[in-house]
Length: 163
Image 1 (cartoon, rainbow, N blue to C red):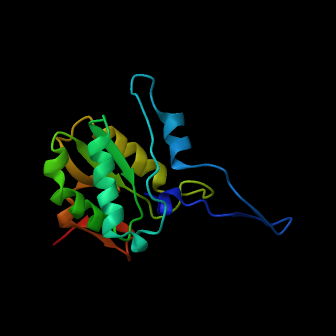
Image 2: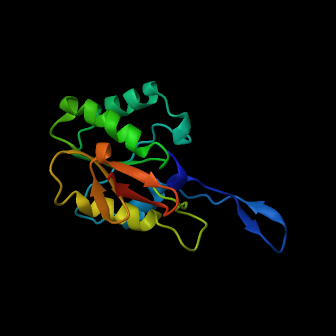
């Protein structure tokens, strides 16, 4: 669904003072790290800042989850409203009750930055399918959360369970 994790920010060339576009996506990354024993397909639904995601966009996400033949679905999402989308999906979980849906994102884009949490979050979320029961989860910072019990801490740049 877009967001920071899939944000392709122009990389600045200090020598030439020109903007260089990096031609890479989360899909490229996942295809490159997928193991041969796991079938991977990708679908791009929405690529926008999560603060601009509408109820209709979230309904499109539910429709795509229901239509998918996969039982494990990973959704990349901007972190500002990650828990809002997670809670929305939980409300519609009866429509895809046998599926495990994990939402993840990052504070720093996947491409163009030496230090990023994106690759760690993608790897952890993907590995989590091995042990999570069907349901909706937010996977960030090496933990899986119930979307209704988590918040983004802007000071720590991480997700934490609600107190």
